[in-house]
Image 1 (cartoon, rainbow, N blue to C red):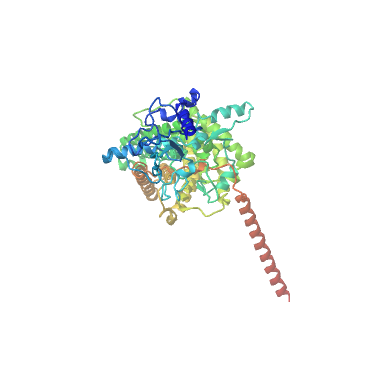
Image 2 (cartoon, rainbow, N blue to C red):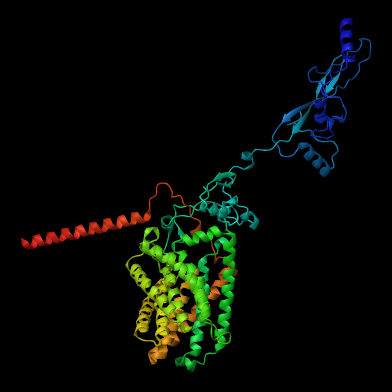
Length: 614
């Protein structure tokens, strides 16, 4: 008994084993209130400067003498580390709950804090409170998403599309491949110098930049004569569930609005100056107002598209390589020619001939590029990319010839008239034979067929200015345009019952051109029929432009659906697995049907001949 007391006393007198300073420094008990829940008995958990607990030797307490009274000894409690995944510390939550409810004594959580251990002995009565300590750890990504929550970005809990804030859309790295200053321009310069393109980082992973699709991919991935409808089996390189930035949704075909309004300025200038229409007493102020409106529209559209060239040059590059959109790159320069032709007399009367050369130079460069591809064959040969929108690349020659002849020039206008006449003949025959898609045209795209009327109408007026009279050549071109106009107008069921789009502006420019040619023709041939046409056609074209202009303003600023996502520039260069070139499949199917029909006809004719011989 004495030996036992001596051993216990020596253990009490001995100092605990000292630990290195670094261990004392990182003990959480030395920081008051750090991740420690207060004891339910009010004992302090740990105080700054207290000696750390020796976990190797455990706790040692002395045994009193048998004759001494019983004492209640409180042994310091020890914290047990429990590691769980929780975003905040439970101590902070407990303190906030206590402040909110006004309770001073914290409630014991039976799930996390075990009941106190009480040791009753005739000698020692020990009560050791046990306390749990919680350490905050980062939660894993997989546990943060609730079960059933859709993983697709841009969708809410119900799976519907949500409109993300503008700054969120601009932070999407998938738009970087279309931006000018995100490395695309540097990669193009490196490619010209013979260096391999470096992979770009998208979403934390590096991949090669998406190249511009070949013409075959446009025909395989898109459908319709304007190739602006995505096929069901294709995918885009831009997010389909988000609304893209406005500049990416602003197409080059927006210049068609400027063509429609500026051609109206020419029409009302012609009505005011034509002798056959003098009974209308048309004021030149109408021409001035329309010219100012068209000038303002041209400036706005050109400014917006210039911003697209500056910030999203890759998108403009994809539009240029688009087999259909490339024709609309003639529209800005044709519109400049229209503004010059419709110039009010109060602004200017005589223009210098150098202006004509400046305006026709871009058209000539584009024609050398486009017509060369049509003639040399390859992927962009005319038989493959022929479309009614190709008339825009033809009509610029006749508009330039008309302007040059009105300015007193001779050789230049004849040159462009000859080039336009040759290529219009080839295009007209190609389009009459067969469209490259060989499919039924959707109703939204039927208005582009009015572009058939534009080229012969302008050509008749151009040759009249070159030759000095509305002679036989001009009348032949005018009668062709008039026949095409009526052949499309009588099929009224094709031009109603569909939603509004920018394709509707294809009505205005050709209809106005036919109206101007009719007014010019009525000045040479005056009768009741020509005067009736001179009143009817300009009235129809003017009402059409007013209606379309109002609808465009409503859809652009009120309904906000005039410029949807331009999927034509966002198709992937990778062909989906298991698919083949649809054009080749259609041609093969058509050829097989023709061969089968030929065999059936030959067999039936042989049977008839044999029956007649018998």
